[in-house]
Image (cartoon, rainbow, N blue to C red):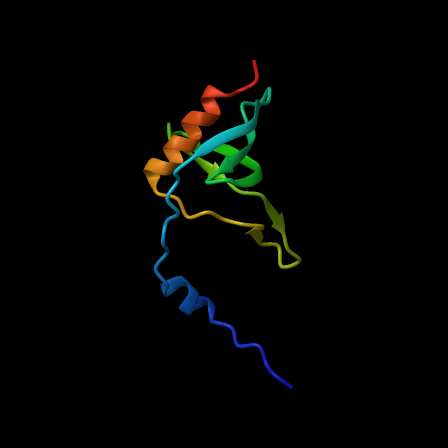
Length: 103
């Protein structure tokens, strides 16, 4: 029987992450809720991504893109998927979201 070889979490953390270059962004849907949260779907480099959000950092002007997540049985939260983005590309996507919010 073959065994599946996996990297330890320490080895995975040591790997250098390569950012995806965002060449094309199209916001499919963007909606701001009464509490200020923003949810959106986007097409990035021709691939559709659903259930994204713009997350505001408390006591700061900083925002970032939140990815869909779930809470596992161990109580920790895990992303369904994640896109490694540079700060510039993240800003490009967030600005496109603000430009396409529902009225």
